[in-house]
Length: 158
Image 1 (cartoon, rainbow, N blue to C red):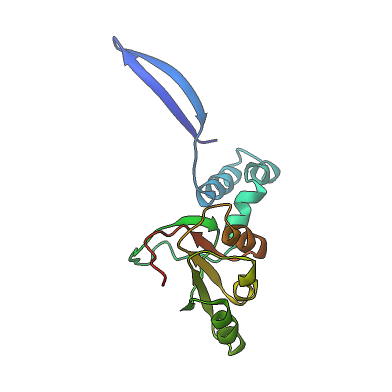
Image 2: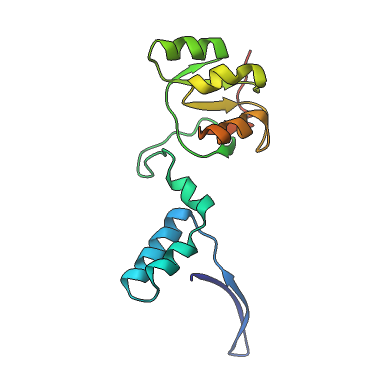
């Protein structure tokens, strides 16, 4: 596996202080596993066991093209994986109405509550100004398999 190695050199002598499995994205981990199988260094079964089910879940959600040009206008917490696009709507009722008319929507709220469930179901994604990884929006979105960015403090919602 890929390793992070801490070392020092004193008086021309190399000392290895410690080593640990390196952190990397699931895409990188998958590529390494496939390459190791292709090189005959590990079996397919070993490769599969190197990728956790939680990491594989990340690959199943829609995502932005990593090569596409992006303009970042705000940031928040990646509360539920994936990418979404659609008309921004600010109420659950609007989300449900637009959805009924065949439109894709992203529900944008200061925060969500149980009363927003209809709008969350109708939306392709959820964006909130407040909240975190365990907020209502985050937990419900993860349960639905919908992308959610929470705690986007740059949002000002009237």
